Length: 401
Image (cartoon, rainbow, N blue to C red):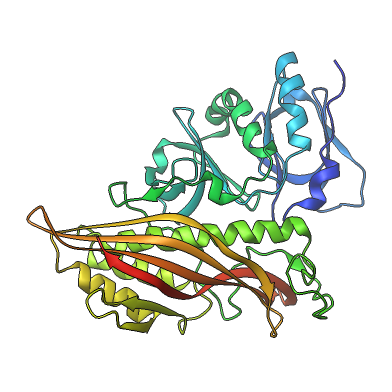
């Protein structure tokens, strides 16, 4: 059998805070720097002595190996497994989605929202549905930043992970697909509720999701972001374009939760807090229009969400649907050095009393999104970090349902 490919070549492409881990046959977790992985051996360096000699573990000493991309290998490695699964570990690319693996061997491409000790709330990126799973039903979570979380013992996890390895490899090696091509036509409140949000914004309005880069040249030669990406590679820029769509989608899912009459007040308030965290600041405004008078008003994001919650309580049932989330204009650089784009979507609101629809409107909306560079402190070191946020949300047209 030929030695399998090493993974050293792709380590530099991935987040620095991800971690290589070897689960040894006694189930102990050895954090390290992987150098080479093959069916014959695993070569690594101790984190306490990265300039020291390579260390080696034999196959019978290893249960599983997780690379800092979050991808993994289960030992022993048989012939067919080595030939088909192992090369994909070396070609794993950074992801803008999470992977959930369940005990019944489901592999779910997702965007994780609320993560509690008992349950996991997420958006299934293949179906477009918001879902909740008890953690007792999960084997592992492979986070988009490269971290992984085992929910059962390594010995119990190994056979499940080996069984679904090809499915996982398919997600790790697939080409980047624009998010708008993956989403379903609408989201409705008929699916299980979930709060989907990135972490609340810090003072720097950066949640760590953006890559650390040098500030670069601030020259505004060239009008579009593709001509001047201010330190971003084309690949990183595409990731942020996708992330803006995902955040818009998260915004719509959270609106569904807030307007659902079965949502508790406590959960609605928590969702309002999380939703404001998707925006560049709380001064961002959402426009509303009256279908009878045509008058438009703008409210700060938190005020808009509070009004939406109050309005929904007037009905015995509310259906809020969204469709056609897509770019209306590409990112362009503004005078302030930030990048701006517009994402459009269609919002349908229906209010029911005693099973009869008493109100309905359809609103075409445009949401401004901003790609910004921030100073972020990490362990006493200030870094330049990019991230994308929602800004003002406007009304193009509102009509009766």
